[in-house]
Image (cartoon, rainbow, N blue to C red):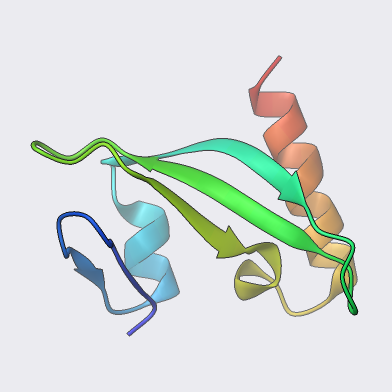
Length: 80
């Protein structure tokens, strides 16, 4: 299992299923400067009777730091 919505209990079995779900919208990035740095991508689950925001480690969508930086740029580009 890749992710489970804590509110409506929807389950996304794989990263690809999560990314292809049209009820999810990328709404933000939360920087985290802990032991390994990185951050969280914030997704709004716009399914009927839901609306929660999911926080997922950005590294869950990449295979390294360069990919995480690319995700940050994509988010910034989409919010302009």
